[in-house]
Amino acid sequence: MASLTIRIFSNCLRRYVSFQMFLPNDPRYDAPPMEEKYAKRGMKTLFLLHGYTGDAWNWVSEELASKYNFAIVVPSGENGFWIDGLSTGHQYGTFLEKELVEYVRKTFGLAKGPEDTYVMGFSMGGFGALHAALHSPETFGKAAAWSSALIQHEVARMTPGYDNGMCNYEYYRECFGEPSKVLESDNNPEALVKKLKVEGRKLPEIFMACGTEDFLIEPNRAMHRFLEEQGVEHTYWEDAGIHDLVFWTKCVEKFVPVMFG
Image (cartoon, rainbow, N blue to C red):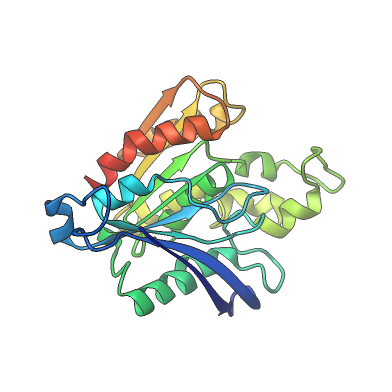
């Protein structure tokens, strides 16, 4: 794999930002060697999203990327939930879904269509992966969301003065907008599903998973039930695990062959 760190000016975020890229090498020189059938079909691209308090780092096996011939793009979304915040320079959703994808497309000739462009994340990044694919299904053909922080219903109940010890009311309002309006807004993945169905647009292929001991298990189960009720085909998996890299690594090893194979 070739590893690159790229620094660009983001109009969405109003500053210079850096992101990482990992590119499979020529299959004659890479180790392990790329399977011929994946080399012939052309390179796919995976946008990889970190969680709350995290930053850009590659947690997908480079061996898997080499075998199945896909590039990995790893941006930093700070703590912005990968959606457009209220204030200037907090347009993390537009940065991911439009600006970054267009840069990768024009500069590297990758991510040309939804059939070649996927998004994956854990925790806050799991929410971001679902939101990005449902908000821009013409860009992302598949979304993989592990232990997703599907907190939109919790946010909708918040009032001024709220503080859960991790974040306060002002933080959630900056990310999601007016809490009382969140459930009807584009910042709610459920609202996006309903909108796509009403408009008759194609939904992305969705993969979800959560550990049975994860503190986010119930919101993930609720999203799974919602998708079933809406008749949205998706893959949902539970297994023993908590909110950690051990479980997310299991998810990657289980689903990357399905997504890219």
